[in-house]
Image (cartoon, rainbow, N blue to C red):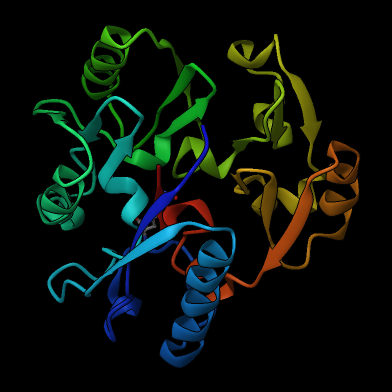
Length: 253
Ligand code: CIR
């Protein structure tokens, strides 16, 4: 899918009050803003038109916009976030997406976070995680099937979201953690398997012919070189302290 647009949301000053499993280091607001601005500037440099939304003070995780929706050429599916503290962010995203796409909705009892939905050409992998339940995944699959997409449900045993473990690098190639490399769903794909010490790099982003990679994963970078795409490393260290990464920070379409 050739991307021309992105939607992001600025982190708010209370972003450190979001949900996180990382207890060791307190994230820094100024550094977060610098990293977020560099991320937005990179998307723009790659030719995307970027809409920057304002923070939602009641939702400190709202800058992880990826979780609120899944956008495909034909439709935008508004998610139903699985964490109670984040449920509501999707309602703030819907009007922005309605300007670009017709909308469909994941409804209770279904829950779904966009971070669990991986698009690989005309195929969606939908993670069953602590955030996305079977009803949410099946609702999404039914919507996508109407537009001719194939869908496969994939259990996510350890990570927060499917896309913390696997990213699509184009041409039938997945970048994947050792935990997910053996998943049956991914059998037909060529896999680039990360060294366990670099598992965070599994959340990479293919933007047209460029790969955005979190900074500091040299082994992963080396393994991607043969794909012949330009690799851009970005520091997303502060988002990482809030359990997020590169893909979570934008909706691309
Ligand atoms: C959360 O726990 O929901 C946020 N602190 C992190 C969300 C990361 N989103 C993503 O991986 N798509």
